[in-house]
Amino acid sequence: MSGAGDLVLTLPLWAELLAAALLVVGAGFALVGSWALAKWRDPLRRLHGPSKATTLGVGCVLIASAGAFAVLGQPSLHEFLISLFLFITAPVSAHLVVKALLKLDPRLRPPAAPAPTDAASSFAGAGNATPH
Amino acid sequence: MILPALLPWVALAFVLALLFNAWRLLRGPGLPDRILALDTLYINALALLVVLGLMQGTKLFFEVAMLIGLLGFVGTVVLSKYLLHGDIVE
Image 1 (cartoon, rainbow over the protein chains, first blue to last red):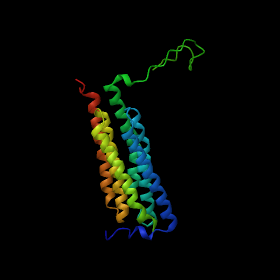
Image 2 (cartoon, each protein chain N blue to C red):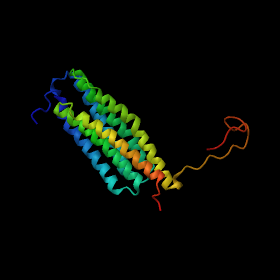
Image 3 (cartoon, helix red, strand yellow):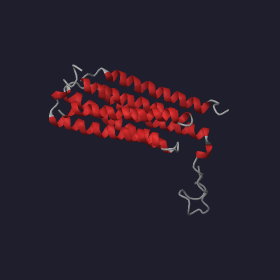
Image 4 (cartoon, rainbow over the protein chains, first blue to last red):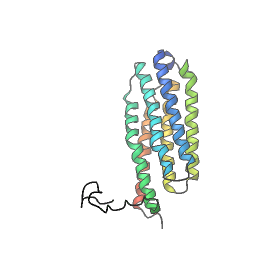
């Protein structure tokens, strides 16, 4: 790799340490998220990894890259846009997968909350509390 | 000095994450699990491209990463909607 590291070598030490820390944290979170996706046997438990851990890990990596290039004097809007897009869309993807799972197997739904029997025991007062 | 020595290990971590996702893609009993595995494959591939862009010192890969992110999300939404509104079970 002839061009490898040419740009990255000229980072000041504080920027390099910060980027290295963010990259390690990000890679760790993404690895744990994918490991959680591969490991769990319950389909609803498998959602925790990709929706939260992988999104956070990849967001950290993108922030590290954006910061490194910004310190070098080549700020690019792309990484911020990608990480913003990821933070918005990855949980939405997980939500849609949950809806598909619940449609295909309605037994997975949590049981409905029992109806409040007393006016004083419901949150919004008598006649207003309806269990979903 | 730190970053050029560290970046191959970060890339290796993402390659491992991709392998885990491929395992779930092949294994996952049922379609929603495979859709989720595919979406996570897209996201990890995006991150791997960003790391490769850092290793080579170029911003060229970010265009590709943005494309992968956008199209991956669109694909996931389309597949999930097809599962929700189509007749798959019968």
